[in-house]
Image (cartoon, rainbow, N blue to C red; front, side, top):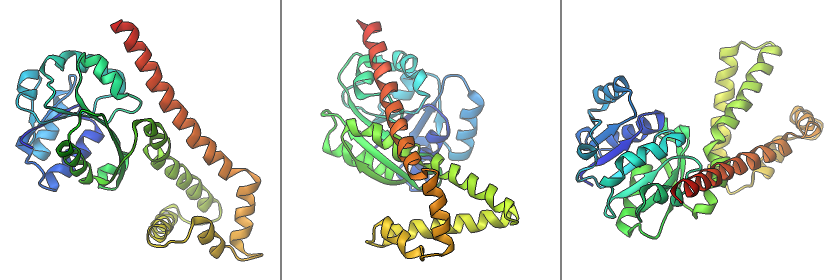
Length: 279
């Protein structure tokens, strides 16, 4: 890969740039970044990672191997409209936009392109993302390897069917927020039972790290691991009974199902809107 263009300069774009530069996949000078109008943000990325920046589409996209669409989903139409004349079938287009289908991107570009949809999560900022990828039939085997290598700089990657990406969005895309929500509750309860907040945070974080490591290294199912911690008549059993009384497990299931449904609704709405506007 000689040149990478990133359209959008938010936290996900920065996470990818950081991973690529730190892993020496590309030098900063080989990465071109643009956004809608925030020149100060582009300057920050230039100073920190040595990336090239521009608002000239021909300069950004000339001789580019891979383009990452990392703007806000609501801005995808205007961005693709501005750059579509520079897009070619030899380029690989990678979208990290939640709810924006491959079909929608092709409708906007008004041409058939090699497109990969990616659903990373915010843990990409520390190289711990769980990223699902879905490619269309125009993506070559070499491009598949390239995009996998790119996202491996920010964590684990796996390929899925595009129709599974809504479920991935609801599960792992939004997943960090569910964990943080849980930690919020654990911190509040810790203060109420007499622990200092900073001490509670240390204990909670180490508990989560230990549990995650246990899940990754054992063949035991989570139900079995839970039972091994839950002694009859003990403290864990008392706590679990309260969670069951309040239907916490069912609430988490409903939470993920609704997030998945919302991702699907967003995609269908955008596709319908584009179909009407282009029709």
